[in-house]
Length: 125
Image (cartoon, rainbow, N blue to C red; front, side):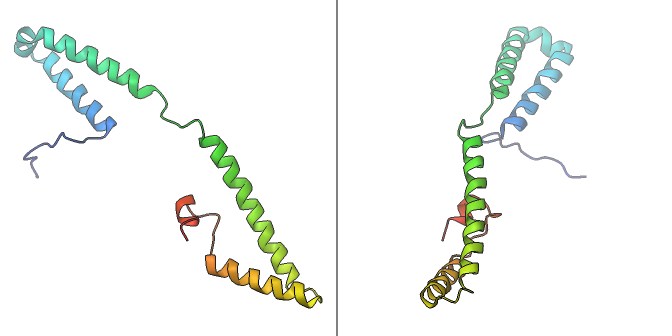
């Protein structure tokens, strides 16, 4: 069985930090000797943990997230329509329109945009 040698508490995520403090607090309250000698510190730690729990409940969601998702879905639909329109123009008997569609088709291939990609990868070309 592996044994933990050291704990690095410099940068735990919020959940790991909260769990660690909860466990420390539970053990401190369960040990009669510790509880009798450090009752003021235990009360203080418990209050700090409860405040941290309240702070972590607050949503971290950006107010723009829904707007970005809506705009991204609209952009994906427009891009899909653009690709279909360009593909349709390639088959027109009008020579200059067919040539222009051929150039645009090559641009579509060169940029290789896939609306299903993450936005940063999709626009990183």
